[in-house]
Image 1 (spheres, helix red, strand yellow):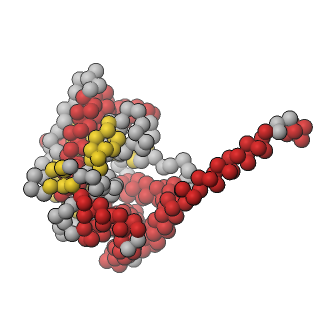
Image 2 (image 1 turned 90 degrees about the vertical axis):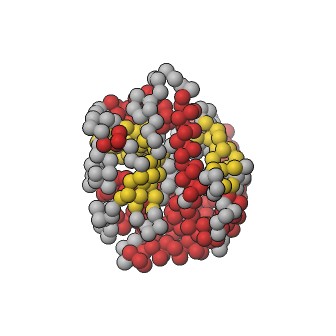
Length: 343
């Protein structure tokens, strides 16, 4: 064994080079690691707070959000909201946006622990398409990254009267890093919350590549089935095959056309919707008009269909920015009178 090691004198040098490269990258990554660690600690604390009386549990999420608002992250959020929504109170809008993730996590943890139930909460459905309740019809339900507390109303028994498969983001491979641990906590809570809201009558599928797409197509081949899938998932680094376009204050983001492709290949229509919390905190769902599946060989339709869904989501973000959980840019602004993004 020692002899074999001596025959590879470059092994030790290669290891040293890897360590040196890691140390060189550390200063650039350190702020992000610290931020993720703080957010991870906040979620852990809120997981305990979720067992408190409901009012106290959500007050804890608001208090943590107020601390964030006084940090550099909060400063950037206020600046973005002021630029993107000049007609709104930037402080209030930034606070609502910052606290959204914590409040959603508390809502999920309370649902999982049995402290709250979805069955007792009514859901108001606006412009609900008849296809949703048409016997035998299979559909694709396009979702965005809006309030997780609100979208639980979509999984309430009877809201989608079909055999349902729900897609979630895959858990990151680097689970030991703060970001990976934080995402694991959030995704696990969403997955368990969906199952509790649906009384277990749902298949949860991590959308992690072609294998997931094949499983979804098999599911949709059966009559009276439905799939929920996020259409506003952002492709990091502008990967090949993405759709580049302005979105919600950003000059350009890249999106995966997976929802449109699934519709085209499975020949199932798309029902886009935005679950939200109304002024009283009650559950509501706003539906877009159905999008018929294009011809199976019409690959160009993937762009058109994806844009149609994202346009609908953009308008919803403009109307309720504090209920969107992803970043909102400041290169464009929402014009309330025309109900559109400009710039």
